[in-house]
Length: 454
Image (cartoon, rainbow, N blue to C red; front, side, top):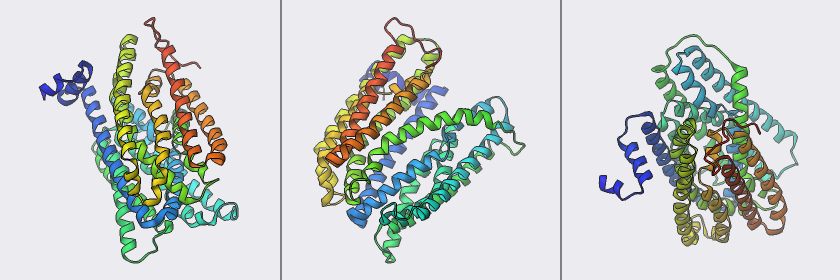
């Protein structure tokens, strides 16, 4: 191992050496980041394989219906946790560190209840809207969307429980259920349905999804409750709902911007194209997006270091680490994009012969993803150093640009218009983040990050 580390650049060798052999909090955090990345990579493989099988089983049209509905479940279900899936990582460790067990128990009970309750409310409202608004939408989606509404409470609870696991560094317990167990359960249930003779359509897939989402949520809840009993013994509860909501709602806003940026192209395509075209776009976009896991890994690895350097006021080191992190993100992303583009047609053919029509979109989408890779973990850096308001403004502006571009380009250019709109929006976001970071961590060696008053 020593000779491997010696062959790496100094900062990377130091990071890997500390991660593998260190006993401190930083080393444990780094190992947790690698565990998280490993799970996400495994999940990407499982999801890719499951999407290929689904596309083959369902056919292009029904797969398009399923994927469109699933994107809505992902967006609404994540929003239903109201930001508590992220703020639990702050509040519970803080309460435990100060011996405030009543507040910790109160937060867990309230946040889980709010997440589940919001999911129920959204499900009821969604089902009512589907009935009242009958005729406002394509009837093809009515039953799949009705079934999708039943997923929302469990999806929201799983999103919150993901945060609970991360708050205790139970990375596998946090990520494995939604990213590994759920897609495997979905595949098994759909396979069973096909074997017993159910129709191979989006409705069957959504029935399987409802069971998979609830099964995952209940299993994860039981395991976490067992583990948490050893950390927080039974006792009274104290509630600070006003504080928790004040902190969580801005996080919800940031998460909402991110979700919209990631999914707006698919959501708006339904206004102009048939489900089979949505299927082709979805398969192409999710395939080329595999390169974004490099961005995820580098960001997870360097964020604790950025926070430490900021606390010490070491702006020069922040600039140096950011420059290195940009290279660590961009170069592997370039290699990954090149590989996926070269193999693009055979990979898309796995979904079905119709899906190779999406191959030209890979080049367009890759440009936007590489623009994000070029600025590396700049967004995360700005958030942990007190520029969250400016970051939110950039993300909101990018979302508006994304929506406007999609509505302008899709009617004229179809799938290529959606891909172009997304890539341009990513480029605008990357440029804005870069300029703000350059201003915040200026060459004078002084950072203005005492607080974000924008």
